[in-house]
Length: 230
Image (cartoon, rainbow, N blue to C red; front, side):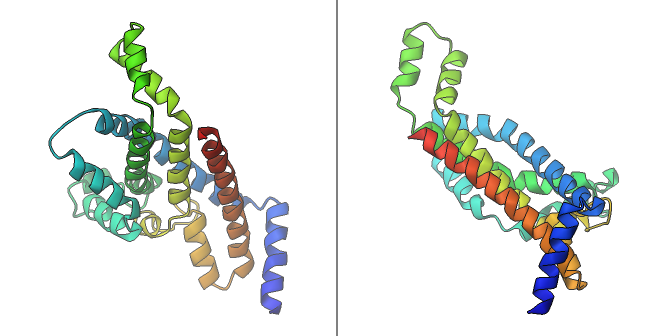
């Protein structure tokens, strides 16, 4: 019991002293995850919108696939990307393995099915009269699409926060693709795993507290956007 109390005390000392290593890990974690979320949102929101409003062969199968990929195991994503960017892989020439870019790719793959599936769900829940009204008032197809997205904005923002919560807390893909290199690819989840195994309990708890705080902030935004939908 004593080592737990000592670990917690050390954790708060590291946090309140603004330990440079702790906060460099936190900043890298945020940079990687936010980059992945921005990229996946730029692609996932339009795709989710198009899947909802367009009729095409295999639409139901596509929706089922996206919903299935919501629970995509992170280690499987890591394995897939590793096989592509390792030295013997087709993209090995670019030297992406064990870089922050590799971790962004892994988190992008994890996030995009979440954003596509939840955007689809958000657009599907919008009253069909929104598009018809916009077109009746002389709006172009692009303007009517914007009207629909604007109507679904809080649900879409909820989808983005959900995806961010998923990627910021993942460890499997980050460990496989980043290598957990100090000062280069060490993020909160991989550092917690490493430092705890080394016996640096206080360091691991400090990062765990910060990760929990980030999770709390994400949930506050999530519930805010959820309440705005009502």
